[in-house]
Image (cartoon, rainbow, N blue to C red; front, side, top):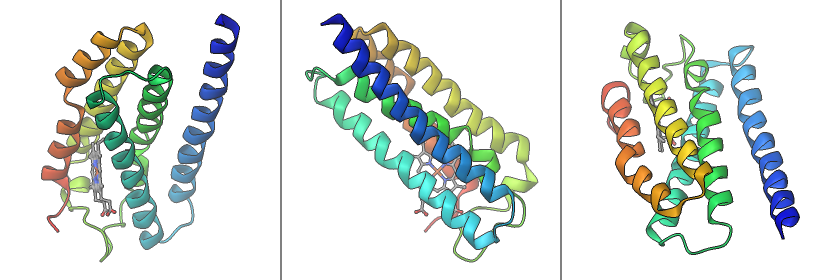
Length: 164
Ligand code: HEC
């Protein structure tokens, strides 16, 4: 029982590694030879990915944490979100405020604040991952609610993303 659980977890972590590596590679490529449009499209995809995973996390937490694989699933979402969040500065190189982008010029005018906003989100997810790793479901739920992770998404958006 212990072994199979460990195997399951190891396989899960391997997949998280692959998903994270995908986003790291995507961000590195965007820093190289892509056009502003391509970079903007890529970061919008990255944002949609974290959006989907945040919704899944919300639903899992709201469901009352009954499933056997709760910890692993939550951990995977949190780690992939974090891997992407750490790429945020690299996904916003200068010169990429193209027509289809909602990135505000303030991103480049107030770069330290922008990076701080990404850093705050990273810190929150790190705290959440630590709670998940305890395996204590009550603690996981309480920490998730307390951290209010999506509030960090919203505060960056209100400062640095144009309205629709
Ligand atoms: C450091 C700032 C920052 C943080 C933190 C941040 N975002 Fe964003 N987000 C942006 C900016 C800027 C854009 C606009 C990008 C563009 O259009 O080029 C954006 C765009 C988006 C979009 C629209 C993508 C599209 O299809 O155009 C979604 C959805 C989104 N973010 C979700 C999230 C979620 C969920 C989180 C938190 C888990 C988050 N973001 C955290 C800055 C941030």
